[in-house]
Structure formats: C-alpha cells, structure tokens
Length: 409
Image (cartoon, rainbow, N blue to C red; front, side, top):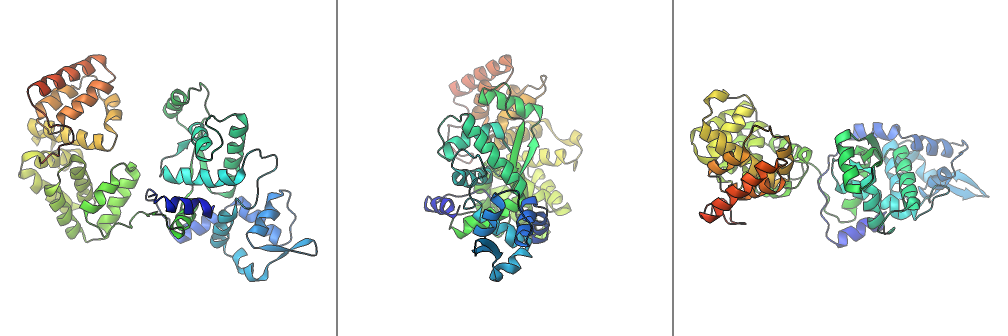
C-alpha cells in the first residue's frame, strides 16, 4: 500500500484531519482483532484453516520457510507480544499477503483504495452502495461496477471488517432512501462503513511517512483562529467541533476567550463569526460573559452574539429584540450556507416560518445569495417563488452584495 501513499504525496494531496485515539485504547482494539489472534496462533504452532493466515504471517516477517515448513523468525518474536505493533505491521502488508480464495479482481488495488477512500470521507460513514461506484473508478476496475466487481469489493470489506480495520452499521431509513435515489437502485445495500480508530491511526502514520499532508485533530491548536478557520470550512461538523475544542484546550480559558473575542470582532465572514462563537462556548463562563459584552455593542456582530446566547439559554429569549433575531438568524444561515448545510435546513423548517421575509428584512450582506438558494431549493414551491420574486426586486433596486464581494466591502 505504500506505493499508493507515495503517489498521493507526489500529487501534494491534503487529507482531512482525523481523530487519533490514545495508545492504550488502540492497543485494546488490536487485541480484539480476530485475524490477529489467528496469525499469532499460527506463529505459535497452531494450524490454520484459512490459507491467507500463513501467507500473512510470512509477509509480515513473523515466520519464514525452513525445510519446507514455516518456523518463527526469532528477531521478530517480540512483535507477536505487542498487539499494536503487530496489527500495524499486518495492516501495512495486507496487500502483499494475496487475495482470499475465489477472489476475482486485483486485491492489492482494493485493499489500498478502500481504506484511503474511507479516510478521505472523515468521520462520516459511507454507504456501501455508493462505495461500489466510487471504488470502481478509484481502483480502476471499470466505470460501472458489475456483479464481479461488487462481489470482490464486498469480499474485501468482509476481510477488513474481520481484521478490525472497518466497522459496518445499518443505514437509517432516511439515508437509505437517499442512497436509493442517488444510485438508481430500489433495493440498495443497507449498510454504511467507516474506518475504525485503529485503521485511521495506522493510515495516518503511513501517510505521514510517505510525505502526505495528513493532519490529526489538534495539530493546528497553536495557530490563530484566522489561520485555522479556512481549513474548517468544508469539514464535517464533528471535525469542526473537535478542532475548536482542541484549540481552546491549548490555552487558558481567559486567553482563549480573549483571542476568540478579537477574532469575532475582526471576522469578515459569517462562518468566521460562527467559529469564534463556538470557541467562546468552549471556554465556559468567561466565554458567556464575553459574548454578553459583544451583544451590548450592537450591530451585526452583536445580533449574532445575541442569538447564540439565546440558543444556549444564557439570556432570556424574551429580551432578544426582533432586529437581533432577524439579523442574527440571517448571519447563522449564511454561515450554514458556507458549510454546505443551509439547503438541508430548508427542508426542516416549519411551514409557518417565512424565511423570505426574514432574509429580505434583515439587511444582511448575504441576503441576496441566500434568497437565491431558497428560490432554487426550498421544498415549498410557493416559498421558492416568493424568494425568486424578492431576489429580483432586491437586484433591481441595487440591494444586496454582488457575488464574491466580502461583507466588509
């Protein structure tokens, strides 16, 4: 698999940050791997029903051929007693061990492509049905997966799950319905898969060794929010939350609150204000006190702080003015739009909630862009039409910010 990582490095690929679990937790996970037990048992002299086990033990350097049979390699004897090091060694050589019996397609390409594809998806589980199409292209197995391709991918997933490199779960009905719509299959695979923390740790070490930019959560904790923020746009919510928690933990609560407050005042984009407020929330009472002070200053930033405080129950909702609600919510929606979540929020809005009136009256710099999204994607045709009309009137009157112009322009 190292060749795959080196190809990524030459392309200057940047991977999403990953959670790295404590070593003690990883060691326990390695101990629970059924395949690890089988290989250790084989090295100790037990027979193996699965022909993959002897091959894996040999390519991992645990046994060698002597007079026609496998004997333990003495210099690697301590490896057998270290489950974490052994698991990592086996993971790095899984492609060299060869394919399971009756395997139809290039095993090495699949065992390299599946983990890296899941790694790039971050903490979000990937539907197996969609994975078939992705892997058919990534592993160069043909643009449209046939039954042979699907069987080979499924067999590789079974092996990786048995090894402890991936975990499989059943998709909830809503996700499954979306998968059926995207794939065009009325009865798609009901499973989603993701990397285990053990595999994410091992892959991160492999990628870094190959020169790939593969950060871990917390690596950027020393940076300013202005430096960290751009990398969080487009990240999964779990990653954003974890990175900001790590950023705050790297400082005292008072220092973190002061830095977040300064960034909040200097922020030029809604998503930057959102990150600053999330960071403030991680500092405890001092963060709430800081946000109360920001609210008192008024303006767009004050409105954003007011809505944030109300959502956390830190201020009485009845004390929040209509202007604060309208401007603060518009700013929140603009931040969600930057993170790719605004469209999904539209589907969850109460039918009685008039998003068009809110955005139009807010005076928010991004209201025209948000109205265009509502006009295109709102599930209620009447609301979508109303948004298109409001957008047209706003453009005709010269209101709204031209596309691409920053909020401070």
